[in-house]
Image (cartoon, rainbow, N blue to C red; front, side, top):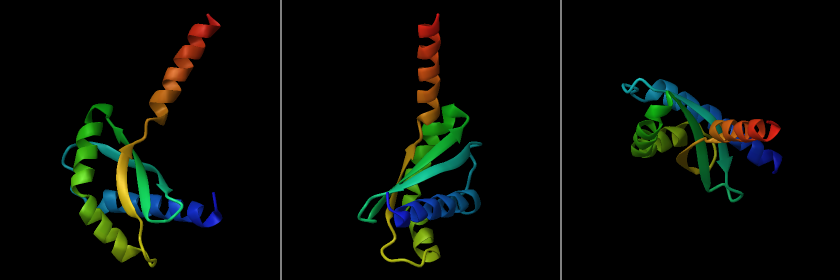
Length: 111
């Protein structure tokens, strides 16, 4: 991965996190954390990985973010001094669940 894409991943993660924290109405009681961003090699698209607490509100929060993606994209376009700004999409980060599953399997093997 090039240094430019790494920097852009970090920038998008931080900016989208700020937008979600300060610009969106959060009346569902969920804590949304931006875990990371993955920009495509062409810099046209970006996947924003999020984590939601509590877990049972994850799908509702993801749906709300998908509904607000146009508004979030507009705010991002105003904040970033680059063209084109990657088009964003959201997905739930499942790293923690996978890690728990692997640890459970390793525990069973150790027995």
